Length: 352
Image (tube, rainbow, N blue to C red; front, side):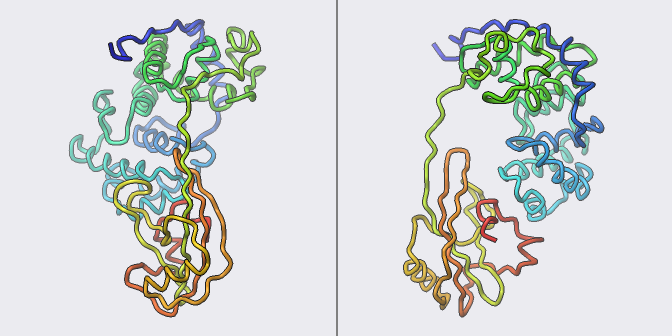
């Protein structure tokens, strides 16, 4: 028997009380966020993709800049990928912006440039999963479809004291179905956003929930038992792999060497400083630069930095090496070009 068919749907105590508790609270306390100014599907879509894995305050500036340059689906469809990647620089998870570009082109061809209004159509667009489709359809089109992310799961698990892993796919589906059943007609968008707001500003992770200001405090099981910090229950985390890397800041006539990452895999197709696996000594780094045909001068003091991806940590040692001649294996970028043209992932930008 499959895991899906054997999954026992839990009861979700007090869920039916949420709309009446959350809606008036949300209308009084909702944050003033730029993507809440209207319910234009293009704006909501862009904001929801940006907000994945990223805090709202960090997204605000990116959102303004992105819409200023690409105010419509047709403008986005006609964008150059290099410009999109540069605008996205620092947000990470670059496949998100590539999927935005791909989806804009698809909407232009298949839907005449108008964002589709059916859930099934929205859900099949590149880069749009259950959560984003639910957010767009409930906020923009008043459909009773839940948008269930980690914040929402945390709220539901605490209110009902759900003692099972909330991040298991069958549990997410069960929570979504239970929420869909209580959506208030004509207020679907506000209810979706009230759940988002509760998880982002009040029902915070760990031992930091702001229970006294919570509109659900009167029926929250975890608050009543004092066990807020023990919820939600989650599946065991994968161990994060650690990689040591040596990064080369190769300098020639005031320019730095760049190369592209492979078109598949981590940071696919993005620009990077040349780097190799392993922690090289200064002499080994110099030998590598010679092997690239660069006529290098002795490396300057090493910089050590780290960067954490979802399942991987890079521990990096960087050497700044002046070169007597360039190599055609690299692009040589001036400081202004690094600021305006080439998108460098955060892992490498920290060496600038």
